[in-house]
Structures are given as structure tokens and as C-alpha cells.
Length: 362
Image (cartoon, rainbow, N blue to C red):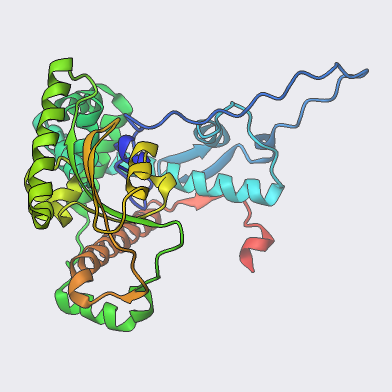
């Protein structure tokens, strides 16, 4: 299993950069504290506050005002140690201007929501959370592995004021933004015009390819549950060993990894460090076509089949059609969202009051 598969983060966002805090994200890496140094003979002057070079009001429009303190508060949430870096003036202006644009849009969007009296009931909010979780491949299974359920996530979202506010905003945008779905013909046109992007390079020297069947074990599973899962994995392994050709069929029927139903357990190509060590080591020890014994990892019990490496390959249209349609649909939604943002920005006469740096104009 890929390492990042164990990290679940619910983040509903679009080009408007609307999101709520990750409910189950990995811990933010903390900057290392440098070793203590002898006190200098003379105290050094404290670094200048980079925000003081910004105007007091950075963006404004009809009923909209984004202040320097608003921008400071938003940007300070992004630094892990509470110390904002010293940036060149032009870079600081670009950063502040971008943040101010986002904050201004969030303000005017909130105004639009209030004007429309858009207030979804808790049942609608719950359905929206569930739908968004299910739309992110592997997220639901990852949550289960970490001892969480969809109900847990729904409760956390609805109990978090900021998360709930962002969810309402996302639902409002979804309701008010229309985009045309891409057709198969649209996908074929894109495919024909971008054949160079449809080529898969040959596997690297260290690249592994494998398929697996996962019998997942809940993080809070009892010893009895773990024993039952291990027993089930051994039973599946016996079936696979007796009939190796049944691997894909069994993966689609019993594997708890999304790769089971999506691709017969095929994980594609990966570098060893992308997977948890136990999985990579077991896969690397196999010869192409060989099937492992049951391998235990933090996710549960795996049956791994090493797959043969691949040379460079041009993907057939049939292989990428669904992904291209999904990509074009996503792009259409993003374009529609950007058009909506620009429309509201004009209507509210939003102006950014920081002079554009010369470097950005060129």
C-alpha cells in the first residue's frame, strides 16, 4: 500500500481555494530548532515585520474589505513555527495580493450565500460530505483502516464551524456553476492532439510493478478480528496458489483496496519508497509472475503478485477514454468556476490596492 494511502484529508476546494482544515491529515513537519549559541556581546535588532510594508487595506469593493491584519492572520496559519520568513518586497506583495484576492472572494461569496438565503439542512450537509468522500478514490477505505467511519467524519465536519462554512460554500458553488460535460468525441479529439502525452515511459531500474489482494484490518481491531482476517487471507492465498489465473477475479471479489474492483488488484508501477517497507521488500523479493505468501503491514494482510516490467508504451484511446472524459469535465468545471469568480469580482468592483511589482508586469 502506498504510504500516502494511510493519510486521509477531507479538503473540499476549487479554484476559489475554498477548503476546510484536514480532519485526518498527517502531522505538519516541524522545523528543527537550531542548537543554542552563546549570547552575542550586543543584542541583535529584531527582524522587521514584513507585513508593515503593506497598506492597511489591501483589497476592497462593494461591502468588501480585506485588511493587512486579515492577510497576516491567513498567512501566519501556513507557517509551522509561527515565524514568517523575510521575503523580498516584490515577493511579499505578490503573496499578499494573492491571499487578499482569495479572502475578498470568500467575503463576497458569503454575501451571495446570505442574499440567496442558502442554508442547507443537516441532512443535505451529511449527504454532501458522504458524496465527497466517495468521490475520492481510496479515502473511505483509508478512513476505515484508521478506525473511522463516514458517520465520524460527518459529525466532525458539522461540529467544526469553519469546516461547515466551507462545505456550505462548496455546495453553493456547485449549485450555481454550470458546465457542459465532455463527450467521447471531445476525449478522442484531445487524445489525437496530445499523443505525445499518452506515452508511458519504460520502467526505471528500481521501479516495481505488482498486484495485490488486501484483507484490511481495522486499527482498533481485536485480537480475534486480526486472527480472523489472517485466516481469511490464508484461505484466499490457497485459492490463488491453486489457480494463479484467478488472481484478478479474487481481487475484485474480496480485496479491500480500491485497486481490487478497479483493476483486479493492479497497483501499476511504483518506486519502493512509495510503499510501506514490508510491502516493497516482499514485492522486490519475487520474480515476475511469482505470488507471495501472506504479507502483514499496517493496513492488514496482503497477497502480492510481482508483475513484469514494461517498456515504453503508447496508451490506446480505450485505455484512457474514461480518464480523459473525467479530466475534461474537471477542466470545464474549473473554467466555469473561474468565470464565476471573475463575474462576481466585476460586480463587487473588487480592487487590489497593492501596486503590481514591475517583475510581474513583464
